[in-house]
Amino acid sequence: MTKAAAKIACVVLAAGGSSRFGSAKQLQRYNGEILVRRAVKAAKDCGAAQVIIVTGANADAVEKSISDFESLHIVRNESWIRGLSSSIAVGIDAIDDGDAIDAVLLTLGDQPLVDGPCLARLISTFDRKHRIVAASYNDIAGAPVLFGREHLDFLRRLSGDKGARQLLAQMPSVTRVPMPEAAIDIDEAGDLPERD
View 1 (cartoon, rainbow, N blue to C red):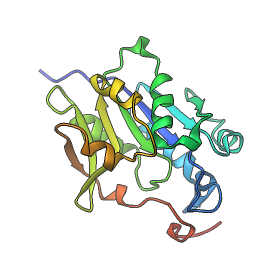
View 2: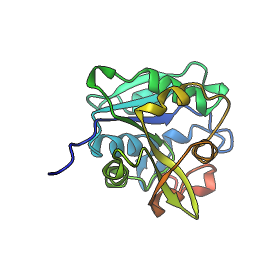
View 3: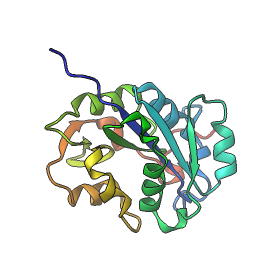
View 4: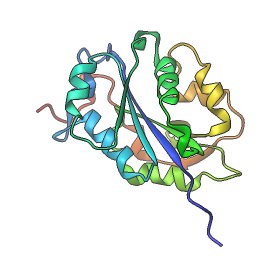
């Protein structure tokens, strides 16, 4: 007997102010494609039941760049300056739980090599025994990361600018899925292979 597919809500976090980058990194191109579009495509391609993107800084321009995607729930974090945790809470609150979601998958808008198959590997690992599933790279566990629904209240109560590594350090058992693609993230202009 094969296990039933879990219903996953994928939340793409793209609200940050890009202070280290110096401009809206969500709108920069990586190998010819806008970063936030790459992140949304990955989320749409992974088999998630819902895809939510959280915008904040530069919201109008970011939302315009992804306006052609269908079945995409765009939600603004008006308090994005308060850090990543506020965007996580906004994304979770936007989940339509009428779909009886089993878990939430948190992804970032600045990991350009993380694609749909990468995210699908995390989803396929999630089950009754593996309730927190994280990407593993450079000897750490980090984003993207999937949490069973029993952890949603904990995620809503986070405060500050906590990234996945700090968050996972507070959690019980974490299942790691090797994902070298997640080691590449765009924090500064020099992290881009090309500017076009």
